Image (cartoon, rainbow, N blue to C red):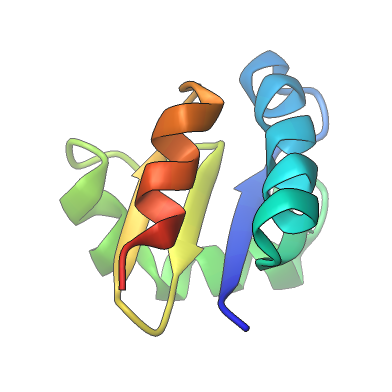
Length: 93
């Protein structure tokens, strides 16, 4: 089963749009989604910083939320986008 991480901020309005899409992806596409809040959890924020090379490369040099990470394929999906775009990214091998 494919596993992805979503890094998000508790008060981030864009994250609140993407979190239900992450749940939908998990349910419809059988993708394991780990949700890590980074604004109030330093351990999660540190994990995000360790993946900064992948994130910044895919997100115009930014390290923001929401961001999805596929650690295995070293790819990231950034910002508020459509479910179709998220699914397309998640299905890449």
